[in-house]
Image 1 (spheres, one colour):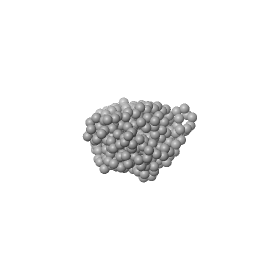
Image 2 (image 1 turned 30 degrees about the vertical axis):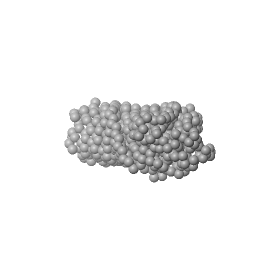
Image 3 (image 1 turned 90 degrees about the vertical axis):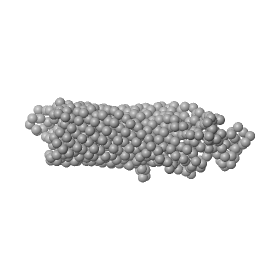
Image 4 (image 1 turned 180 degrees about the vertical axis):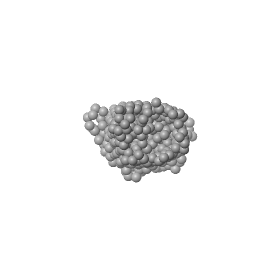
Length: 516
C-alpha cells in the first residue's frame, strides 16, 4: 500500500496550545528574521547598508544615507526567487522546490536643499524617503520521507491526550490507555517496526514594510536620519504527515495493558491487532500581523574617503491574529496490499483562533566604508538580540499564559551577529560591477545547527544622465535540522526524529530607477 502524497494542512490548533507551545517558539524566530529591503545595487554588494548612502535602500538600511542625495530619485525592484530543498530523513534523501516572482521594493526620495546648500556649510538638505519593501518571503515547499523503526507519530499524539481531543482520539483504535492509567495512553502502532513516514510542508506569504524616512547632511561630514516603519505580514502553512505501519501483536499489547480488549480474541477490538494502518496528521495555520518600529541612523566622514555608520533599530511591536485547524485520520487494512480499508477513523476538525502581541529583537548595526578612485569596499556588523523576543496577551494584561513560552525563548535562543561585506568597481563611467558576502549568526543555543550565508554578484548600468538599471544574483544557503514531531523522550526512551535540511535560495533581482 503506497503512502498517499496528499497535500493538506499544518499547524497546532488551540486545543493543543498549552502542550505544543514549542511551535510558537519556532514562529517567534520565523517572524523575526527579516532582512533590510535593498535595491539590486545593494543586494549585489551583499546588502551592507550601514555605512553607505545615496541609494534608495537607505530608507530601510541607514536613513542617514538619505542625506547623501543631491537629486530626487525613484525606483522599483523586481525579484525572482527559486527555492530548492535537499533533505535527509531516516537515511533517505529527498528534494523539493518552489519558485516565486514579485515586486521586492519600490520607493522615492525627495531632495530638499536648504539655503546652506550653495555655501556647503551647515545643514545642507532635509530629504524625505517613502518606500515599500518585502523583508521576508515565506514561499517554499519542503518534503522529506524515510523509514522509522524507533518511534511513531502516535507517540506524540499519545502525549497530548487531554480534553476534547483526548476523548476523540481514544476512539481511533490506534491508542489505548496503559494498565496503570496514571501513565496515560500508549500507541497500538508498533514503535520498533519499520514505518514509512512522509512529511509535506508548504508555506506561503510574505512580510513587508512601508516606511517613511528623513535624512539630513551637515557640512558633508555628519549625516543623521530616522525611519518609521509599518510592517504587515501574512503567513500560511500547511502540512500533512503520513505514516504507514503495523499495529502491535497481542503479546506486545499485553505488556502495556494486561487487561486490554485489543488482546482479547473474543472482543471486537482484536481485529485491530497486527493490522496495517495509514495515518494522516493534518494541520493548517494562517497568521496575519501588523506592527511598527523605529530606526535611528548616523554616518560620519572623518575624511572624504571613509564613512563610519551606526544604526539602532527598535523591536517591531506587532499584533498577531492566528487561525488554525487540525485533524487526524487513520485507515486500517487487513494487509499491506489491500486497496480498501476495513475501518476508517476520522477525528473532529479542531479549529482555533488566537490574538496576541509579539515583540521582535533589537538590532544594532556598525559599518565602515572605504572609497577609491574607481570603487569602494564596505562592511557592517549587526547585533540582534534574539533572546529578547516576547509574546504577550492581546489585551495587554501581561505575560499570563505566555510566561512559559517566553521562558523557552530565553532558554533556546541567544543573541547573534550578522556580518556583511561587499564592494563595487567602476569599469567605465557607464558600467559597474559588484560582489558581496553575507554571514548570518546562529540564534540557537546548545549547538543546535543553523548555518546561514549567501554570496552575490551584480552589475550596474547608467542608461542616461537620469535613468539607471541594476542587476544582481544572490545565492543563499541555510542548513538546519527540523524535528518531524516531538515526543516525551524521557518517557518513551527514544529520540524525536530529526530531518537534516539544506535550503538553497537563488534570487534574480532587477532595479529600474530615475533621478529627477
